[in-house]
Length: 326
Ligand code: LMR
Image (cartoon, rainbow, N blue to C red; front, side, top):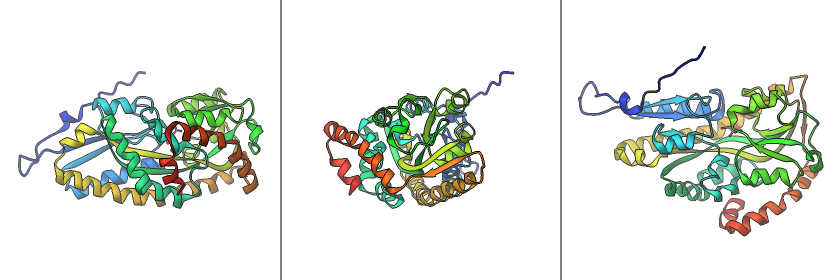
């Protein structure tokens, strides 16, 4: 059976406000690729509710989860074309447009959650979001998922040379590919919607992701070895189409910004909690082998990645690096 879904353009959904006959309802299509019960999925829903409440229904945010409208490889183009008004791709996926954002993918760039919070909501975050302007987009906020962990179907990954010769699924970010190359592994870029199927078919020996994505998409079924490495961070850029944003009345922009700030504060706490709870649940799974890296082991990984920092600095300077590392 082939299911045909007719997507109506938001303009077609605009209708006159019943009371005044003047005010149009503004509809925002918000497309994302993860499950609903995840930090991004829940934040998107919360944002939609807050916007509706704060604008007394003048703005409606329609959330499309699970890549049901566009896969992660397509969503940035869809936003630029104006087919959707809002997306929240991972920071790694933005590096294709804005290579400086690779700084956020450097392994061990964030020490802990408070470091993430300082960067995402502070000066560095503002500077990063402002770079989206040059691409015709408006960055509203940086959202959190959590620290990435390493998984494999072969063995526990503890020492840097445990990675040798293994094939890893990666997001499209050069720094992430290099991270695996310096470990002697073979990185292969695959979009999120294909990860489950490719793991099932053993196209890869491993992948890195947050507990929330591993749990909600069932990746652990094919990858029983999980190393809690907290080596990288998965965050999101919440982006709207620049022209669409510019066309909104000032008071609406203000309400949306308010709703976004409130959602972002909530998301920072909620994402941390959700990843922790789901890790506890996975620990109950007898099929899984979960190992937490010791400080000494983490140090060895860090040593292996030093060349990536030097390379980044050579290419992009150290302004962003210093701001982030404090
Ligand atoms: C991934 O591709 O693994 C993630 O970026 C998916 C997501 O949006 O969390």
